[in-house]
Image (cartoon, rainbow, N blue to C red; front, top):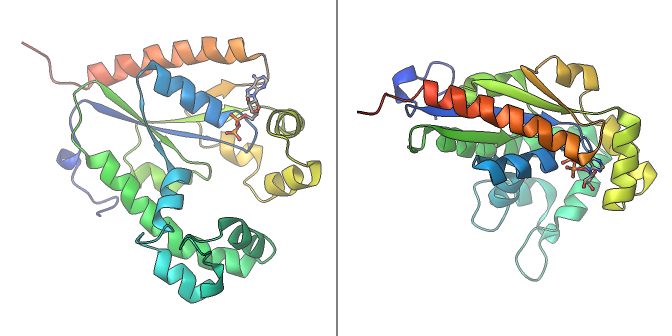
Length: 221
Ligand code: ADP
């Protein structure tokens, strides 16, 4: 799949590509679901990462070769919880896993970007670890960051998702900082308030996304 040098005419016309990111517990999944309800096509990088390490997936054999065949359960599936525990404790192992998984996920996302869709479509790429390179790879028109104070994210992860505090803290610490994420944003969804307040912001964002998608569509007769 070609990258930054891909000719712009290869992109499907009238399709708006949006990157959506946010720290764990910020409300990114809630925002992605809200945009899907409004009509966006959501491409979920986490779901693609699970697919590429499933049996027959692009990275399955390479992950077993690197991390051991004993990671496979009786059902043939990779024990993702054990793999996660291994790489969480070992930065070099984590880098190895990312080097195996990220290119396959990137290729699948790039294919989704190039897929023909009806003019006026909005495609949201839900990417927990969105990097500046994704902007080029996916020819993103806009990057949206879901933001809330880290202490609030921590509380929501404990109360809403039943996560242990230490677990939530260590996952948050392994991510880019709030400032690094915000530096990527063209649009910020402030999720420090009530769920209804996020919904109101999603209405405003969605209206703007539709406007831009339609402005990029060829005029209809
Ligand atoms: P992320 O995908 O960023 O990790 P989620 O969307 O899963 O975050 O949100 C984390 C938890 O906080 C979930 O249980 C979710 O229901 C809850 N939550 C999200 N937004 C709000 C909000 N504005 N007020 C209260 N709880 C929220």
